[in-house]
Image 1 (spheres, rainbow, N blue to C red):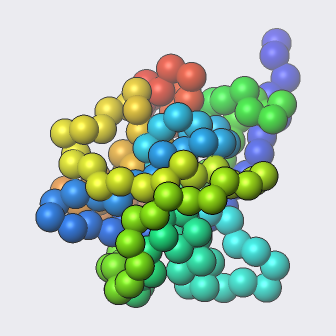
Image 2: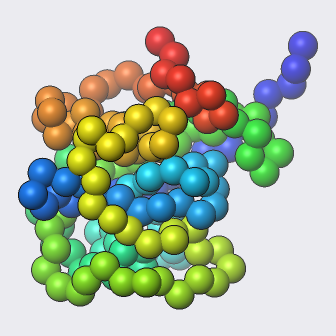
Length: 163
């Protein structure tokens, strides 16, 4: 029997919508590499959730935001061969945000940077093959106003939703 080892990731993520399009980043690292993902990420030392949200958004998109409200928390169980882990438990705090400054910018790349830049996409442009679970859940929330209670299960390499 294959031994399983888990990595727990925790982060903050922003849902920013304009003209019925969601702002996403093009992921250049991590388990969601080469997929659309939500702007956001992990907290730095002694950083609050809200401060981390504003910082991550600016770093990954070039846009300054105002946090409208905290939507809630959800989680994903992901089967993935990432950094030697077989599984990831991704816990995500979602925020509804709006742009108050800045503009989509060509971002400087440096070690640890995992965004190639940002773009606005419609729900019709995403699929389980090209989007992270975070983006799929964001569009679900935009349709239903509900994040749900149960974790979603994914195989990152196949990206097929499991029941």
